[in-house]
Image (tube, rainbow, N blue to C red; front, top):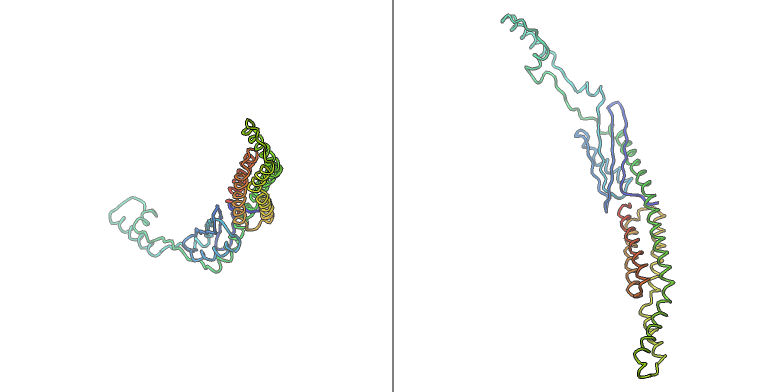
Length: 296
């Protein structure tokens, strides 16, 4: 089965340092384009994440977002309180209150308002080696969830493309059955037209010349080679689709070749019925090419 290039995956893991949340999104792209969004404290792990994604995905525009929520213990360790300075400020405020004979109570807000360095928060840089052990597994889970969604959407793409291939095959069979009819019809029209032009003069028709002209027409309008090649392209395309590997570019190339062949068939045959079938075939091929843009 084919794989779609659009998908979403999410994973979450918790350890002593905190919680890791990874979200992976992918969109259509000719190549593999990876962007990573990380907290500043984990920016050193960007290349490791990209390497892991490349190992699992081959095509598409991927965005991997990482959220890190430190544990309560880690947060507590990062908050520092200068108790000595707080006591000194409190004692100073008590002295001022007594000296000025103030009745207002001294509250914590009064102390903290005098300095913004009494309570500080320091961003501690985690050990990237220990963090990567957990984050790597989280990235893998998120990307594998994304791949699972891509595979599910790929099943629908596979069915749709095969249905369009069946449409092309049916219409091509109709064209093939029409080939002899076109040649006989042209021969009959040619003979009738010659008779109409020469009947007043009662000229004798050269049946050999008529046969030669019809044979020349048949050769110039012979579409058997194009039909054979188009059949071969259909079979090849269906085989690629069922393989379900990285075949997006191959399918797109075959679809282009199919379009070229059906254009030649319609041009050579110069027949209304064949042209109508050709329009249906070209429409089905165009739909295949549209779907291929979503294939990995």
